[in-house]
Amino acid sequence: MSDTLASLRRKIDGAGDLESVVRSMKALAAASIGQYEKSVLALADYYHNIELGLVICLKNRHQTKGEVPVKTGITSKAMNAVVFGSDQGLVGQFNDLIADFAATTLKALPGEKRVWAVGDRVQTRLLDAGLPPAGLFSVPTSVNAIASLIGRILVNIPTHDHKGDVIPLYLFHNGPKSGSVYEPVSQRLLPVDEQAAHRLSNLPWPTKSLPEVIGDSEPTLRALVGEYLFVSLYRACAESLASENASRLAAMQRAEKNIGELMDSLNQTFRRMRQSSIDEELFEVVSGYESLSTSKDISADKD
Image (cartoon, rainbow, N blue to C red; front, side, top):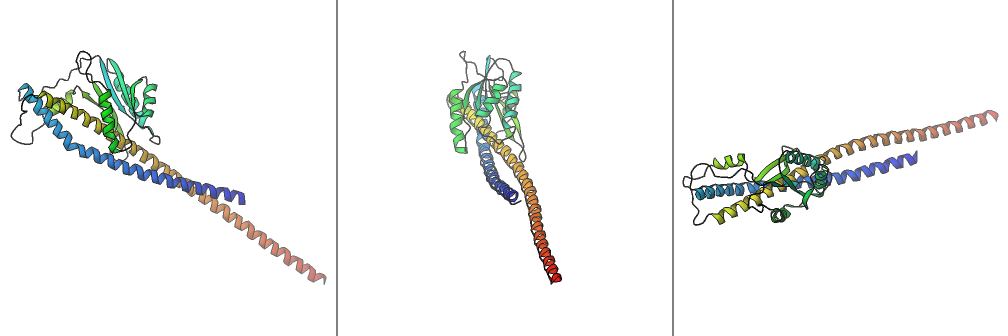
């Protein structure tokens, strides 16, 4: 009995230690979600200003006050895609969901697919789905590391083919929803898709006077397009990291609940066995006392 009680006590202590680790990971995931969500919100105004700059550059370039003349057609026979995943575990179906979504979307499109994976685990899922990645990038571990990752992506992924045509660029990542829920999201960055072009065409200017680009608008346009790509990739990465930590937070909440239920069960078993052990000891004491009393009575009767 003592060995069994000692074994139960060790299990309870081990579950308590594991619960402390889970609580720490839960707090870390919650804090990480906050910093990535704040970085996305901080980009909102800058992204809007870039869009306004693109509208003015394109309108001035073509000297029109109508719709923004954005080319939305695809002429290149190849396409590039960036899939943001995770390098760490305890994220549930995070990598499976985005890899399956990317594979289904890309297989429905014509042309050669060149996929760059952000994260070892999502790279494995893409290989299983029949999409061998053309390159691999490590997932950043903080907000400060996102910018360097986006810089490497922009350097390594070509935007034009040998004919000078724009190579389509697609983004795939998990985007956060309310609570700890996330969903797969896709976006075509290059060339601008019809929905984005229509939105740019109807983007209102905040004042009554429209600005003009002095001199050649090409350098300004190229700079704005570069910033548009950078901010779009940055936002996708930050949203993916926020979703990853939301998935990890949900996993830690489930683990904490399971550990709590296990500890309740172990504690109930321990108390029951402990009470049973005490009852046995009391029974032995009472039995011994009664035996002694009986022996004394028999000796007295003989005398």
